[in-house]
Figure 1: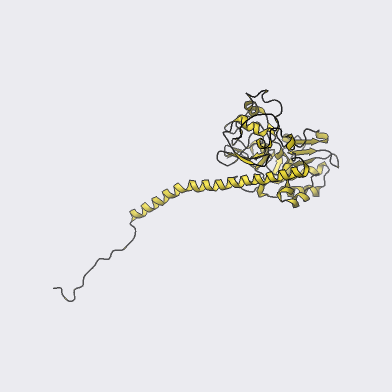
Figure 2: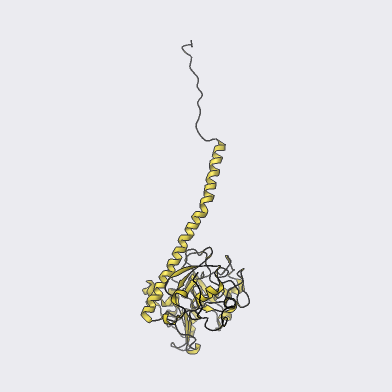
Length: 356
């Protein structure tokens, strides 16, 4: 018999995690995050790539609406000395020509196509007020020209085209908004020679793309704009434009070249803006596989260098998006055969190939 006043003593146990259990849970969570993070990043990149492709589709619609209106695609760019008052320089590019068909009619109507958007144009006899207005227009950020995978997003920056690079007696300056898409002008140099090593006639003959430069007056008459009828290789087999990340940076295998390199001469001539006339001139000669410049080009056409003329470039793993002349878009692998990619660029060389 227990004493009446005896009280049973019970031990109270507190519920909770021990230190070991807590460490195990943290470790499991870290492992799950490590496993899920690449999938999340891949999903985000897939969405960005899809948006980039959609940008090109909208640009493709603009090109075809332009063609319906004028029975031709716009020229890549134009230098025209036939505009008053002489001596004068008129510089236009495909990006300004299709504005009205990209739901940017207000910008198109404000843009004076007779006046180059270059600060020094006033010295060539142009109205400085109109020059300033045109520069303001081409420095308007347009998300449809920017791929969301590119670092920096929508970018606006100042450009200096050195006299040594342009051939003009003074440096040319202006402000512009970036474009991650560039004209497909043709193939040349080392890349063309490699691509057509086994093709009858080699790299000679017709190597030009659809969007050509037009020179008038003192600049001659180098090319005229191309329409669907002039794309003899077929619109479904021929590129109009492709991804090539815009300014102000130039990339080599993912690394940005310092803007002070060669005094910024390469950056100023890189044609990185949608209103930059040099964005309409992109004869592909390739680069070396490390992204550096070779002598007259190199074997790598995709994702080695973003220097104008040296390559197409994107921040999508494995390749780039391109817009074909029929309005379709394709993702082209950076391992595509040289002959196939060169054949996609030319419009009337007569190659026979299977689209990748």
